[in-house]
Structure formats: C-alpha cells, structure tokens
Image (tube, rainbow, N blue to C red; front, top):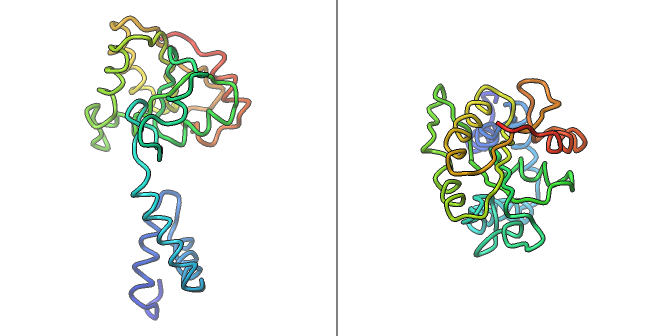
Length: 201
C-alpha cells in the first residue's frame, strides 16, 4: 500500500493477502471495503471468523470439518455406503464431490498431500486415522480422489501400498482432467465420470 496508508489498514490488507488466491491489490480493496462498513457489520464479520474457528472441528471419523459434537452428518447417515471411502486432500473436495449428487459412500479427508519439497511428510496427514478405520473392519473400497498432480499421485500411490495389504480394494479416479487439474474447480459432470470410471490401483 502507499506511504500515506495508516498502519492498521496496511496490517489488515496483509492479513487478507495471506489468504490463498488473494493478491495484494485485491487485499487492499478488501481492506478498504472493511473500512467503509458500518461498525456493526465489521463486528459481525470479525465474530463470524471467530465463531467458525471456535465451533468447527474435525469429524472424529472422517476428519472433515463439522460443527456436530460427534460424527459429521455424512458419517452419521444410515443412507450412505460406509464400505466405500473416498479419500480426498481437503474439505473443499468433499463439497465438490457432494455437488455431483452421484456418490453415496463416505469420505476421509487427509488435510494435505505428501510433498517433501514443501516439508509435508506422511505423518503430518490424517493417514493413521484412515488406517484405524480400515482395521476396524467394514471398509471394502478406498477411492483415491487426490488431484492429478505430482503430489496427488505420490500420495495416492503411498496410500495404496499401505492399504492394499489390509485387504481393501484401492481404486483411482479416472480423470478427464489435465494433469495439474484441481477437483475443487471441476464441473459436476466431469467429476461424476471420474467417479464412475475409476480404476483399480
């Protein structure tokens, strides 16, 4: 921001810029927009952030975000096929697949991908929780629905090697996506085809 901007405004813009996909120009516009809000709106905006942080936690079963005290609505549903577990990188991928209205299994959220260059090792992901679910019995198929990136493929292969000896079928989405594509931004039809045409790993 320019030299004439007040320090709290600069700090606010920097906080917005720290969010993924927000460049400094957009961050500056957001900071000015907040300054133009009535104080009550700004207070509600800040409270919404804090409420989300305080009330939302990881589902103890699938690790997806939920406000429920126990299992999330998907894990708690008796209408879902609990023998099929779709393994995804993050909560946004669950939302994307749910929009297809074609998948009736459950999920497991890793909260990241294995990436040695970024310092992300397997023990930093929710892999132990996935293995615990499999060992408890009832899981017949794991669908690896990580993005078709180097990190996504490496994570899928790593999990396949870990989970196959436990007696589960491991399949991979049939991507009609370019390499480097992102599930979160993929249209519902492509995602449905990827789910339908998954292949065994």
